[in-house]
Length: 211
Image (tube, rainbow, N blue to C red; front, side, top):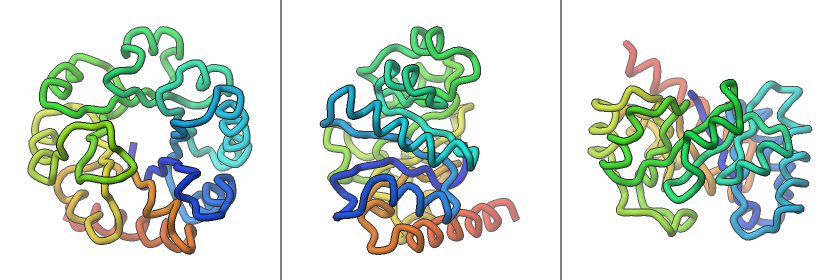
């Protein structure tokens, strides 16, 4: 899992449709999209997943469903992102199959240690910084916490929480393999340009780190 990872929040889209924001982000180079809608019913959630798949499949960009293994299975999405209170990894893997992308949020050091024995595809370091879009999480990890996880974990790390153009480079240098953003794209006046700026920053920072 590398690059800019869009996590949706339709309420943050400021009058734009969710589909148009995702389409703009795709054109600008986003590498993955997670459908994260906490306040809608199952039927509407499934409809939105199907609509996003129609945008993403032709571009070979994976759609990850937040929390809901049933929605992921019913829609044919590429994977699911699990929180610590969601279905356990082992059961989700059994249902989703070996080729599905399964990510897991880690909010405490104990979560990180337990995840070391799991064949998850990535860890969601949540949150790196405090953010109004994630109100049900523990204290922020900060850059030091992210670096600590990077030095320990064998998994790719997707950083999420309070990430925008002002701190993206520092987060990559601290060890993130991917940057998950919500408001920085969803609430942007121009989601295409916002995504393109983040993609360019990510690519530049990765080159700096490897040189």
